Image 1: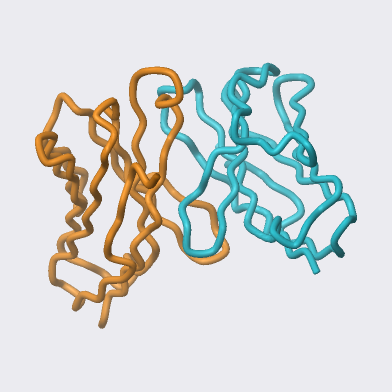
Image 2 (image 1 turned 90 degrees about the vertical axis):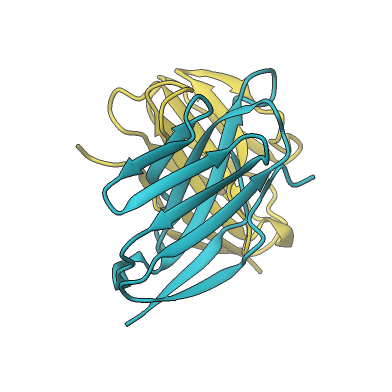
Length: 114
Length: 113
């Protein structure tokens, strides 16, 4: 079963506008969430994270929001730039046996249109 | 600081042949991970090491896959014999400990023909 879901395989956004990437999870034991960015032929690169004790974390143009009751998190990129074009993976980990490892979603390919 | 190093970057082999991948983690990182990434999917953990001890290998197909991290630094992942379905990207990652952010290498793209 897919415990971390990214339901949008792709997203296109105009340069300068806001990009919003979504992620849902099913495991209530998850308490730490991360976003990774991946360019072709490279490994995933850590972008931003959030602990379940927070509902928002911001780093420059990147903000992650966590809605624990809905088991939903989102990544906002504003303003979007051409270099943001990549595949974005949501990942989660948590408490308890088997949950401490990172579980990844299937990724969303973001394309920024100049 | 240098990132996670993996070699080779690409490997093409015929089915039933053996293959090995090598990973050198970031200096000082005690935790090392091997992941498998199939096309259109996210990385899936194969094995996690804490220093030289494999502490989670529940997802490693032990009939054909093996791994080692003898001195608690670099690691090797081996497949013998390879099958067509093993074609994928094999990623290595490291972190200071299991709670810390994981840093990934560029991966090895394996093609089995």
